[in-house]
Image 1 (cartoon, rainbow, N blue to C red):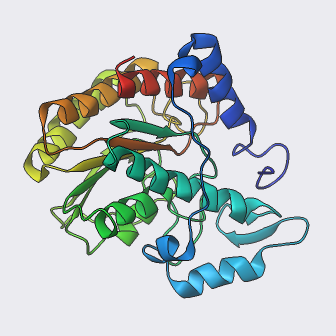
Image 2 (tube, one colour; image 1 turned 45 degrees about the vertical axis):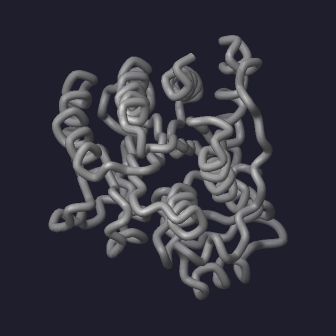
Length: 297
């Protein structure tokens, strides 16, 4: 997919290359099962986005150049095809886990998705990848409880908007307080666990917040599947935020989620999909630490 808004845009193709290269250099690439992402179809997208919104995106897709379709959301010639594959990767990941082929999947895809609301694109996001996957798990595989956890440094407003009235989905989100998109956060719903982090947050404070808020919520909800919006832009070297996490913190939170799955027979697996992370070296190292913890490699 071409860069969504020019060569200097942070949401660039080199992000995926950096992760792939780090997997090769770490030796993990050769022990992983690889799959090409299919395109999500209209039925899968319409479970989480309105028909009017999907139609409007397709009508505005340009033949050349860029078209702005939302705040920090630009379509180029091939953006929607890439976005359909990003959403389709979450569907495929769910299918793979539910078929028992593996217990953990990581989708190395772009554009990200967690800012895409039911009727609005924003923040580099067009289709909400993790939401498409979760809705597929509920509709096709008949699951009754799916947990989505989101440790991107920006609040997953789109995921929250889509599942606002869906008690079968638990949504746990940690993010830097007062940072983009700075949307009004729901606090009166049992299935939304929002953890706003001060800008000065470092690893120990992040880990404590997850242990105090996310882990008890998972124990109470007892998900049959965990889906992760895996954003790595809270890294200390990433200038998207002021939160200062490291690869160790991403490994730690992933280990907690993997341990939950291992300790609870009803939880069939984990499907993780890439969200943010824009300092290429930090992104690559963090994603590989995440993948190693997911697979207990």
